Amino acid sequence: GDFPIETDTLVIGAGPGGYVAAIRAAQLGQKVTIVERGNLGGVCLNVGCIPSKALIAAGHRFEHAKHSEDMGIIAENVKVDFTKVQEFKAGVVKKLVGGVEGLLKGNKVEIVRGEAYFVDSESIKVMDDNSSQTYKFKNAIIATGSRPIEIPGFKYSKRVLDSTGALSLNEIPKKIVVIGAGYIGTELGTAYANFGSEVVFIEAMDEILMGFEKQMSSLVKRNLKKKGNVEIHTKAKAKSVEETENGVKVTFEVKGEEQTVEADYLLVTVGRRANTDELGLEQVGVEMSDRGVIKIDKQCRTSVSNIFAIGDIVEGPPLAHKASYEGKIAAEVIAGENAEIDYLGIPAVVFSEPELASVGYTEAQAKEEGLEVVAAKFPFAANGRALSLNQTDGFLKLVTRKEDGLVIGAQIAGAAASDMISELSLAIEAGMTAEDIAMTIHAHPTLGEITMEAAEVAIGSPIHIV
Ligand code: FAD
Image 1: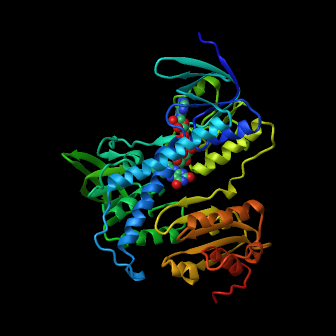
Image 2: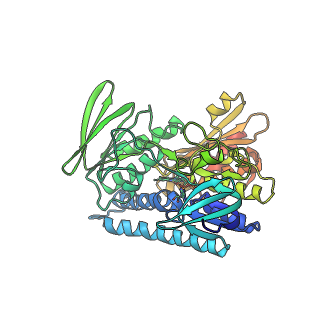
Image 3: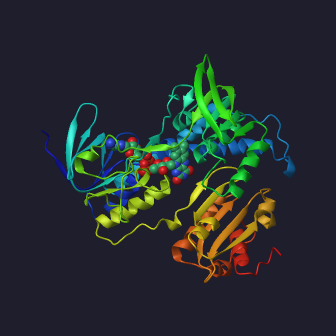
């Protein structure tokens, strides 16, 4: 056997969960080793959040360039060089991945390349192509993330794509079918629609973007339909796919009727599965649910006391900022601090048109829990900045506790919702009331004033709405 290398904290996986946990643990004085079998930065930086937002931003620019007649812009012959778009995307990813490596090294985290496998509750083996090395640890943090689910009958190929495939096409499809209009499918479908593809969504649920309030998702649906090159089938069940010479033929069922659509590509985005199946977890007795999700307590501790788990492999929304948040908690707990997870302030965002963002309780969720709430709304159309940006679509809704005005939730549909939601996460985290927000001076003219105005509505004294 090999001579084991000893470390204090061993992190498996260098996505937004693992690399953040490693840095925080090192900051707190631990000797830290991080093992990664692929690229630093995980799904998020390489094939998730970042490259998708680069494609979406390029698609928006193109769409806006073509359609700003309302503002007096007439741009003829606007073209896309998709190779350049992909180069732009790759450049952003490369910069960030390099940045993560620099940050890990700067914090003296040892980076080990290879695949980790538990031997027992105090050691792992790391395998790369032709060698294996054992590491002994005091504590371990599992942050191995997730991968796209493959549904029976829809095997991924050159024409049947998962999100990774859809991010790395080297041409703009003439037509693309998207099975699953959750946030990943909606974002990628919208990007290609903006680049000019015909897009057909097939969604099994009643609505696209389930999980968001219907008032929000229907704004997105309306804008997608307005584009003219997007078809949306809800309550539709994908049946089969057949690969043709240079495309696919997809069969689906709506209202008991079978339909067939031909396209260049099929994108399947129906959910993700936790990467917990090849880690040897059974060997060490780490408890999992049926779906292969690792069970943790409020300190991110698994059923084995010196092994922690964070990110997409544990319960909760599979989002990068949730993974990073849990990473910091796990590292702090290992260092002896008294940290604990509180999920209420974790926002969820969709980079759709308009953007959607939600944090804490919705009005309906609060009522379900028997809370008495005030839900106060303010429209983007009554805000000067939104008007001057020509982006008046949407609203902000603030959910406060009736007895004392405490902010317990917020939903935003509108331009820059993804940035605006942070103020409301802060309000929840800091235990602020609607009055605190209303009393805060927001610069004029900004979209941030919408938040202030909604807070004024909540306490019954709005200035710019009657
Ligand atoms: P991951 O990022 O999956 O990282 C896990 C790492 O562990 C990987 O690098 C993997 O190679 C490594 N690994 C796995 N097993 C082993 C092993 N045995 N040994 C060594 N290494 C191993 N989230 C957002 O918050 N906002 C967004 O806008 C957003 N957009 C997305 C768009 C797309 C197209 C996709 C697919 C996802 C998106 N997400 C977004 C989700 C986000 O990417 C994930 O929630 C996040 O990456 C999870 O982080 P993680 O650290 O848990 O795992």
